[in-house]
Amino acid sequence: MIWLIALLWIIAIAAELSDMFDGMAARHYNLTSDFGRLFDPFADTLMQITCFLCFVLDGILPAFLFLVVLYREFGILLIRNLMLKKGITMGARISGKVKTVTYIIAGAIALLYASIVRLSALEFLQPVVKIAYIVKIAAIAVFCLSVLFSVLSFFDYLVVYRKTTKKTSA
Image (cartoon, rainbow, N blue to C red):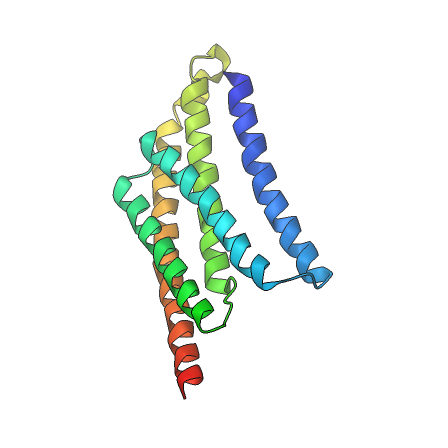
């Protein structure tokens, strides 16, 4: 059991760090491409949605918050496809990056809660189990904040889409 929890943390940290270093290297060496601008946010979204679904199934994340995130992501996909149809590639925006950071923080807190619950059988961790409820409340609070940032970033992307559409049709 302990090795599985450790493995989950290693995978989560490695995924986020590799994404961060990939982006830093692409910008530093000017290796950005239209494909990268589309695929990187897509890959990030797949990972985040998968993690969030696991947290819903584990009873940590309320399903309605997950649905808002899911609908937002489908909405962004639609906007990006509509822009691509006009020959415009829209990569991640600052609002999307802020949303992603809150997703990562929420996921880390939820994973901490899940780890505490699963390790609660170990005698030496019994004092830590008492804070599990507080950690779960913190995870839900940050999930709520991330959903708010998610919705706000959707409207940011929508504004960019509308401005771009007006320019290309004029």
